Image 1 (cartoon, chains in turn green, cyan):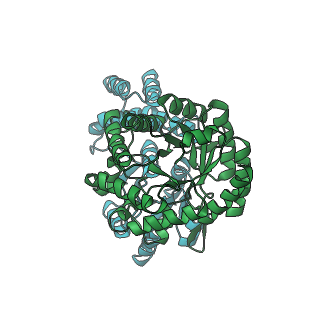
Image 2 (cartoon, one colour):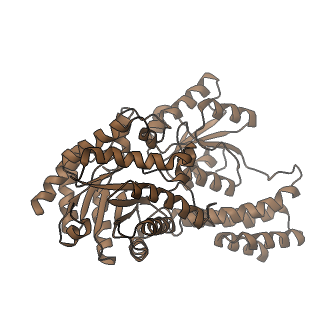
Image 3 (cartoon, one colour):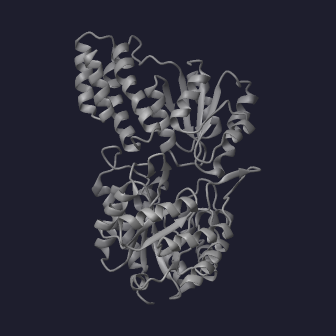
Length: 295
Length: 212
């Protein structure tokens, strides 16, 4: 497959996939069960989801490893299975996508807070991410995707771990921002200028934002990233804030709505557009159409 | 008074060591523990709460301030007659069954303590019966429940239904919160209050316990 960064630098726009968690819930993920519990005997489900997104036109398919760092897995006493969980997730995707799409190894927050405001040291945090990166990279992922970060220190530690394990594997790093009267900030108090500067200087290749508060906010976030960095930008928005309708939660943003807004993301110079919580293969299909019309 | 100001200032800076030093100094200067608590620690925490609400500071600042508050409280605790910090009410809090998201709930716990409440934090993945049993045993006046997943929200209703069954409605008040939780949902399941953020939750708990 052609080098990802070369394609982006040429100005091509790529589409990444949509939600994993909500897809797993529809396929039997129980309340209180970690999504990674699918990575043992339910690999077929992971392959099925990857196929759905591939067919919808995604160029980048994420692995079901968002919570597969040993620190996060320790919440479920699964840390001893770190290697197996990460490896199986990559293989389940590779089996169906082959070389038709890039496989992106998802790596979410550790669930722990760093000292002094939390109880986890920098080196514990680093070791945890390094172990997950080794597992993902040795299983041949094409990209590492560090995502949904709110603490810039944690995010940069993860980027450093990825780059130390493999300097040639492209690293995506995204953070999740909330709108405040003073602009966009993560819950930990990081603004976009700080995020862009911090992630870039640690060696991230592609930076941006995921999850969040709906795609309209993402357009503003993308503009700010463009202002503070020349790296390719990735935006993976959720389908809005879920609303409760008749006892079930509904993500309000439709495929059509998100695709319409994706045009604006293209206009502000976003290089990779995908989805997060609540987005489906239909959302990705609609975004693909928009992206094809500009590529 | 100057020394209480220093306690409040250093608490706001999250400097637990300084808070410890000045709390000791205040004790030595024979300032009553109640005054140190109210006009030093709680006063400082109240400012932290307001700044957090205004997005002037963020989670790390609140967590560090809380650490400093606890450092002061630990020194004061043995000085109260019953060996406990006097409280304006007792609240049992926890994240409902099957929910591991706890930052919001922890913040509410910190702010409640900072407002002078006694807080019994049951942690994550708390079952409905556990909420009720502990609230009864501890004679708490409020149960606070948090959920960050829409899938775990129905467990909040189970707690309220159990309270109804045990005829505890009114005696033990309920407040719910968390990202997907809405005022409408709170009304629908019969919760006494809804806190849209941690600061609002504290105001509502004060209302429920007749403190405002």
